[in-house]
Length: 225
Ligand SMILES: NC(=O)c1ccc[n+]([C@@H]2O[C@H](COP(=O)([O-])OP(=O)(O)OC[C@H]3O[C@@H](n4cnc5c(N)ncnc54)[C@H](O)[C@@H]3O)[C@@H](O)[C@H]2O)c1
Image (cartoon, rainbow, N blue to C red; front, side, top):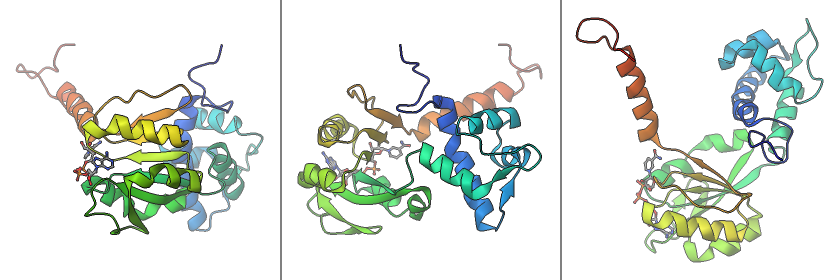
């Protein structure tokens, strides 16, 4: 039976995969400042990971570091990018050129991370032809042709709740295998398609919970569990 904690097509666990982008971000910054080697302790400090977890994560990528010498920054960047499938820029299709979609399309940081926004699609004819970031908004009618032409596997959904499921189904039928969903709705997708949901309200509610946990009770004592 397959282990559900394992990422698709890799021997890496999902928790490891979720930490790799953080390591890659820190390594890019180190490379940018001319650092050639980094110790596991330093990389752990930069990313907030525990050194033991970091060493275990990186051991899954092969024999990259040497005790007392550390990791070669460029080699480690390459190995992590390869594990994440980012060696060549991954085309990403964005659907929804409203407030959120426009802000995302204007974000310049995708390209540093092995991702390339290749198309923005919307159903509003007034938006078609307008520029969003480096691309021009296309009609949602062009969804299938655009996904096929770009050989895109990743898409971002920034459409209203009511449209999200049907747009997701069209994206999946066209070949999308990973969806980053901003609409506050649980998407039903077939096996083999991964959905990551981003919900700022949920994140804030979790923060509020932790704040409440830390707040003293009426007697000055911490609230009982
Ligand atoms: N996850 C978060 O933290 C977060 C934060 C803000 C907004 N949102 C969600 O993101 C989504 C977009 O929010 P927004 O503020 O940008 O809304 P918006 O109304 O400004 O933009 C939505 C865009 O989607 C387009 N659209 C509607 N139906 C479509 C369809 N079938 N195909 C293609 N395009 C379609 C509209 O024309 C519009 O341009 C909403 O679902 C909202 O709830 C999530």
